[in-house]
Structure formats: structure tokens, C-alpha cells
Amino acid sequence: MAGRFEGKRGLVLGVANKRSIAWAIAKRLADEGAAMAFTFQGERIEANVRELADSVSSPLITSCDVREEADCTRAVAEAAAALGGLDFVVHSVAFAAAEDLEGRFIDTPSDRFWLALDVSAYSLVAIARAAEPHLAETNGSIVTMTYLGGERTVPHYNVMGVAKATLEASMRYLAWDLGSGGIRVNAVSAGPVRTLAARSIAGFPTMEAIVNERAPLRRPIDAGDVAAASAFLLSDDARNITGTILYVDSGYHTVGM
Image 1 (cartoon, one colour):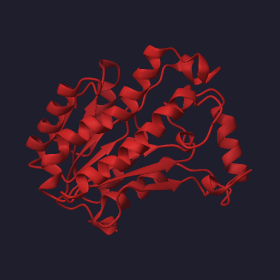
Image 2: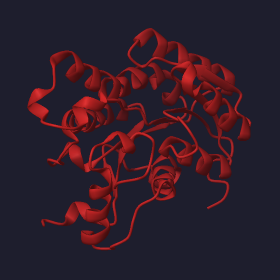
Image 3: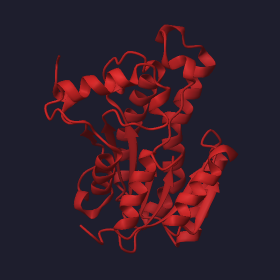
């Protein structure tokens, strides 16, 4: 539906390159009329993010270390100022050390356990807190990205599964806290999508093959599918949907074996 986001303004966190789920969402929203600000973390990806953001005429590309609450607050404030307000936030941020996405979960050291939860889950809380006063003015919406590994054991997903479980619970509590201000908070649980982050998970090709073979629809998921679902949740079409996980996995989450 062209034009659903005409006049809408948003902040997108988590773009790394053109194959990022966050970029697929941003491109879909831009195609439907949205204006967006973008964040990046680290010089290594800054050039990629700037090039992509420039392609959709973004007025702001700013650094943001989501482990620092003051940085989250600053980035949200800069985005709201550059855009003249905020109607939505896309949170597509997650991290776990590569060595913790292989072997046994039980071997995850404390420091890297909390790092994964801080970046992948608490960052949503910090961003939501900073964005609340802006989104309350527009009956705005937040969408975050999760995965079935937060509900079920997925070999090699390990500490990231625990982080996603924390993210999902946080999403529901945020939906309760912010709902009285007209703000909606939802999540999209995507099946295996070939992204830079996915390649760091040991056995990812096997995960992808199993979903393609056993999911009811028996077909792969791509970033565009996730973008379409996210756009729906952020749009006024979903104005009475909050605290919800929308599965985009060809139905795999319904299968027992």
C-alpha cells in the first residue's frame, strides 16, 4: 500500500550493510513515504550505513553505542530534532561473541553472557525510554527483531537464545508500560535470513535447510518478507496490535518435529 508512511518519521537502529534486515525494513518504509534517521556503531560500518542512508535522503546518520544509555538518549534526541518528531523506531540490534555461538551454552562466561543481554535486549529498554516522550506525541510504534531460539532450544544459538527470550519479555512489559500513552511495541520473529550476523552462527546452513524442508509453506524467508511484516506492525493498519510476536518463518514455529 503506497503512501502508508507519508509524513511519518522514524529512527532505525541496526543497519550494517545492504543485506541487513534493518535495511530491508528501512527501504520498505522509505518506499512508502517515511523519512528516517539512522545509527551506526563503529567506523568499520559507518561508510556502508552513510551510503545506504543517503540513498533514501536521510537527514541524520549518527553513531550510537547501545551499551551506553547516554548515547541512546542522545541519538534519539538527535533523530527527533532532525526529523521534527518521531512516529516509529526500528530496533534491529543484537550481538554475541562468535565463540559463544558454537560449542555448549553452559560454557558461556559471565562477562560475555551479560554483554549479549545488554546489547541484544536491554538496548531496547534504553531506546524505548528515550523515545517515549516523542512517540507519545504521535501514538507511535516500536518494532524489534527476535527469533524462535528465544522460545526453543536451537543448537549453536546458545546465549543469543537467552538474549532473545529476555528481549521478548522486555517487549511485552514495554507494551504494558507504554500502552497508556498510545505507544505500541511489537516484535517480528523471522526464520533464517542470510545476513552478516547469521553467518556467525555455526550450522546456519543446516538451520536454513531444515526450515525450508519442514515448514508448512516449505519455502525460504528473505529480508523482504520481514520488512513487509515490520511495516505492517509499524503502520496504522496495526493500531490495535501491541505486545505481540509476528512470526515470519513459513509457519515453522507451528511444527513439532
